[in-house]
Image (cartoon, rainbow, N blue to C red):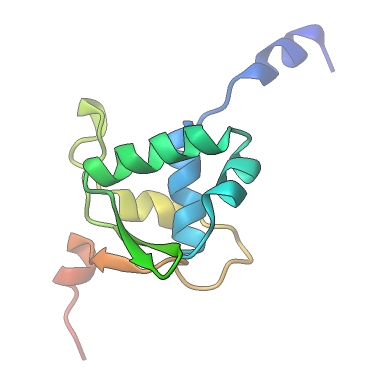
Length: 120
């Protein structure tokens, strides 16, 4: 491997916000401690990201006893102007692990494409 390839290993394509959202979409009852460990950030950073996602309407946080339960708004628009016409649901589907069954966490709103599909 060239030194140029080693140098570029310090950045990733997906932001920590996307990584946290993916973990929540995989397991709607996940603990933030586990999210932080998987993503490689502090628990406090995971808390801030979850707060950002909730404020933006991308997730909804519900208390279930001493734990949180998360609902993902799959129809929420992407935050960057260049992707504002796109919803987060298809991105989550694209990035879902091959061995992961279904869509993972619960959704509190269907994507427009799912809502537009005729029922049989």
